[in-house]
Length: 222
Image (cartoon, rainbow, N blue to C red; front, side, top):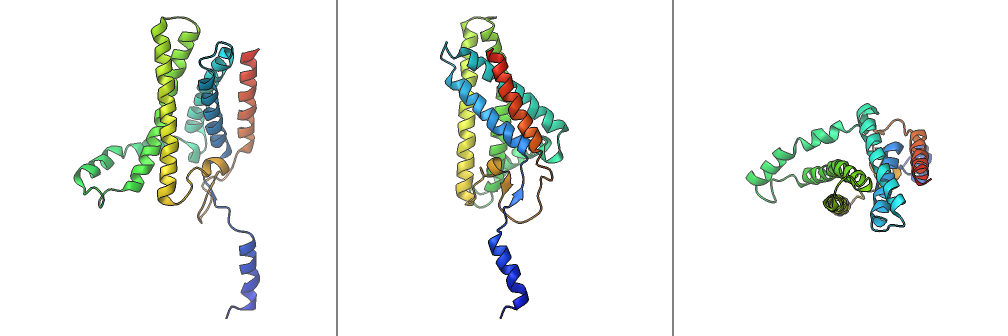
């Protein structure tokens, strides 16, 4: 029989369920959604002369956001740095060798493969922004021929494909693991017990990034 002294603790824990561990800080999440929104807006307005100023402004914003993420990933807090992603990708050759030498279903670490795929897609999107933005500037300033416009469209479509693959990989991983892997980029938290990986949410920096992004686009449109 449960003692009376333990009843309040049990009732209290049932009324206040754990919200999970904080694993992604606010600036990283703000970058993610601003980055996605700027690309989506630029892609939608890409074929319209009327909306060309908005397309250009959002393209510049994507490049600026990439600069922020790289800087934050180098000098920011440990949990927001990009070095762990690079170290994770360093294990890709070994994982591919395990597929070649192991039995297809029994010996391959598919969970590790999911993480590698998602990390690879993230890095590919960040890298793709560089030629996408540079070709966009060249086309806008009319420094080259029509073939550069084709190059710009190619990288725009390539980025869209990478983004779609990224979402598909997250959805597939969520189904296989029976855990929504997209929630941390929305709430900043992941289910499970344990200490927060992110000690400071840095909400102020996320708000500042949002205000700066809106202000930048407005300034470009003036």
